Image 1 (tube, protein in one colour):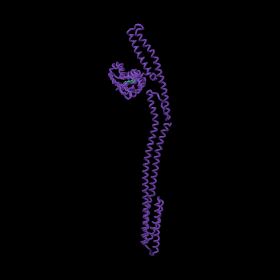
Image 2 (tube, rainbow, N blue to C red):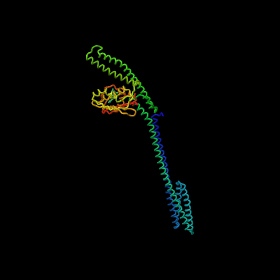
Image 3 (cartoon, rainbow, N blue to C red):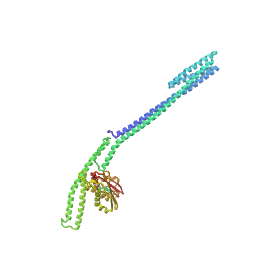
Image 4 (tube, helix red, strand yellow):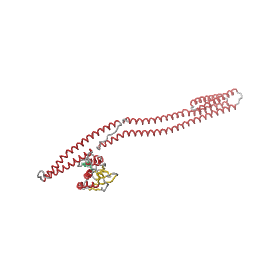
Length: 482
Ligand code: ADP
């Protein structure tokens, strides 16, 4: 997917935002439901309870006034009874508008009929009282009591039904609250995991090309220019990667030109240098006539320096050939301890001059398949460096052990050490790192580059560990001959 970093981040934020908005909407919906139920409890159910209490009071007041009227025959009491009856009717009509269940509506209708009966009895009795004729007083009293009791029973039922309604609503609310809680936890967990996965995928899609570029830049800094970066997305990183690739190609071109130049130069230098050396030797042998002791001394210095230059030019030429893959190796099974001893013999004067003790722990080992001359060159370089970078009266230890299908050789010194950040760099040609003391060592800076080329050509590995001020250990592996 060729999406820009901006698009990727926008998408992830959009998903995050939509998820949060979804959760919020779900909560808002449920809160609204709770709100509706609470309002219906407050406005309807509790008012039904209030009405049934008021209706009971009105009925009792009517009944009280009626009973007094029957005894005292005071018209005022009869009027009070009628007033309470009307109040009962008004309250009942209001209560009917608030009734929110079929059952309660039914109760109110029954109450209405029974109240009409009650008032009918009251009115008929009043008329009979007014005529002053005898009438069945007890029967009326009983009928009215029965009817009023019925009404009070019905009102009680209404109250119970209303309380039951409230209880059911609270119960429903608590149940749906529980469900909402569970669903919310599930949605939140799901949304959280989804957000984490999306964030991970998007971060990874940005981090992966960054890591690739970081590795490539480290490779470039270590002189490894081979291999193009293959990044197609996000577009801005793809552009950066192709710019890095172009830069590598250019650097490779420059490196090739430099190698060609060194190779040509070495070639060109070798012949005149050999001529200088030969000519000087002839002069020293007296072929040009008699020479004085002083002239002899000067000529031998010229020969020494020519030899040094020829060795240098040869090494440079070798390295160029190695890099171009043009150097021929003669691999033969060899005994490693013998090769180490030979190298040590040639380096002994250097070690003795600095009073450095060399402990050779390399014992009899299986044969390794190597080019003898080149491996001697490797040992001379590594042990030579160990001597060069170790203080007087220091010590060097050489050991070798079989590791899998190879032998691992380690050359350990207690010399000046190498800074951690320089360890990779020293294997590049012309790299001389400045030791902690700040002084720069005498040398060419391509000894370890040559070692690396030779060991790689043998299918082995070379690396180093070091602690500044405490010493360094160089490791090489060589494949077993078997
Ligand atoms: P040189 O000709 O300078 O020895 P090399 O390629 O052999 O070139 O080594 C490169 C650099 O690595 C040296 O200049 C030195 O700074 C560092 N080096 C190599 N071997 C050691 C060692 N045993 N102890 C400390 N520094 C070392």
